[in-house]
Image (cartoon, rainbow, N blue to C red; front, side, top):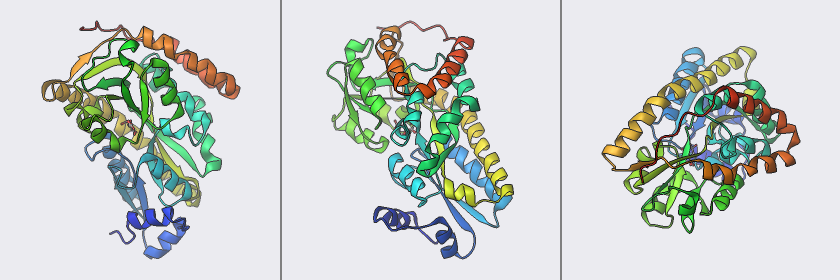
Length: 347
Ligand code: GCU
């Protein structure tokens, strides 16, 4: 049972009152509540995976910990939640890799457009600790660290009324992007007008025509209802941006060796369950978008988009030479897992 409410924690955090995690546990006088926040709906693969985590941890350590999963931005936007995880007001949250680049520039690498040649290359790279290690550990000094990654598919443009076949079609359109400098720059290069905002604000912005479109995976059409408003979804395949599960360092360090092992296993489970659920969820989303929401799926030639965006890679690497070996490792996976043949566009 909850005895400290998240709004209490949030107001403490926003008022600058220091709430230490051990303080929370003491205040509860028993089982420590582990606050876990994310921004997806309760039937989304992310939530299902975190519920599996809750069950696993409580099965092993239920006499000591009570894991509470808060979906749908109940603990705030992703940026708020990362800040709360940083200070220790909450323990764990899911953040898109996009917004993490404002906490450590190393994360920028995984936000690069057209970084991975295929889903297989993306998965193999993200499963390789020599790729993720230098990135995931880079926020340690900021108070939190990445403990696993979640598949968030491929990001593509979708619009209310203008079908996107070429970058030229984006000219003059206001497109919502995630709150990250890389996404703003990408949008600028492609010719659209970048409108950064948090995920929870996008539906209303689309509906009220503050924006002409957005970019995301297929789940946004159905799980977030964007397909009720946007009728064109264009597979330009510009990014494969993982979601990242991040945890407060002080909390992780406070665990005994045995508990750390159990939590590590729990984090592995989050990755496995989410990826298993993801494939089916995307198939269902495509089906519902097409048949119920009447969204038209388009398959443009991705090369013109790619040619405009890939110079961003060299720009980033020239300012971050230490990340070059990681980038080169990703290129090895790209060579091993080349892109699937493209579908024809239906103009
Ligand atoms: C995806 C991703 C989220 C992210 C969202 C967004 O849904 O999984 O982590 O917040 O895109 O565009 O903001």
